[in-house]
Image 1 (cartoon, rainbow, N blue to C red):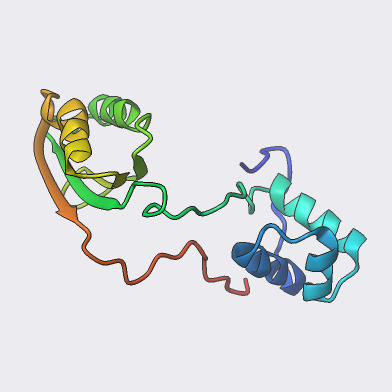
Image 2 (image 1 turned 45 degrees about the horizontal axis):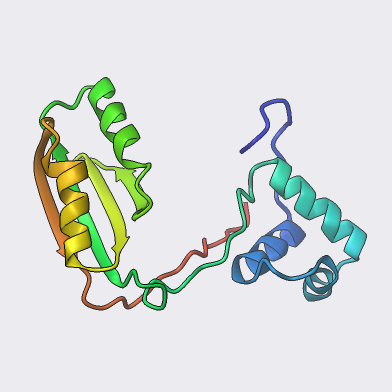
Length: 163
């Protein structure tokens, strides 16, 4: 999260190289990262700390294999609410984001109100989640679910453009 009392920084070429490499492998030591970006370890350490403080790096995680961990069913779900006031949208969103199976939640426009990406073990788990979070809610008008049969691409990298 960006700190409100800090002036935003202009990203230079070194910052972009650091961010690019960290997107591929954030487990590198500071020494290894410095070697890859051709800068000194103290400089890289200061830059990474500044990039975190400024909110360019929001968190670092391990990306796990859903299939190996028993969550091989991917559902892409469109949700349309009956009443779309700010309060109703906020209430629905607050209700569903606590579900661990929901990996991503987007408010979208036009079309449905929400688009969800869900990882589950199997179809019975989907039915239980759909009933608990969608079909039992009075304000949910429409639920449309697509089940992924093949994933061609999954990427977390952002394209970094020189500003």
